[in-house]
Image 1: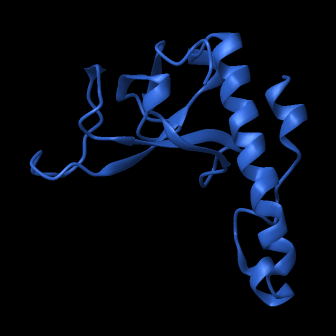
Image 2: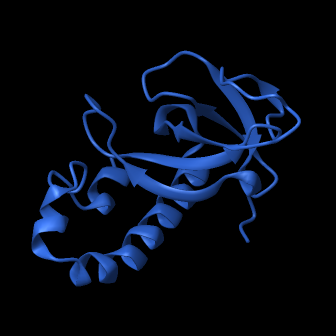
Length: 128
């Protein structure tokens, strides 16, 4: 657990979208690096239940009776530096834990992944 877990962070439904919601850092699950189409580099993403918005709203379709997870983006420019450093650390851990799986994957499948072919090390990006 982090000292920042109760802190509110702003999340976006799309990396260049204007619709945002505030969520508790502790509620953001599966933090990872992902580079959406046309994004300049990989960005921090995670999953949040659609019932865990504290403020704001990210448009999505649900009945509110069956909560589901939404993929959201956390932009460095909208996040406190110490909190973003924690998110980058979590995303780096996720990346490190998934690398053994990539090594086990047949070369033909590893190359087929569109988001891994142009992947750059995150430490240099998170330190920008």
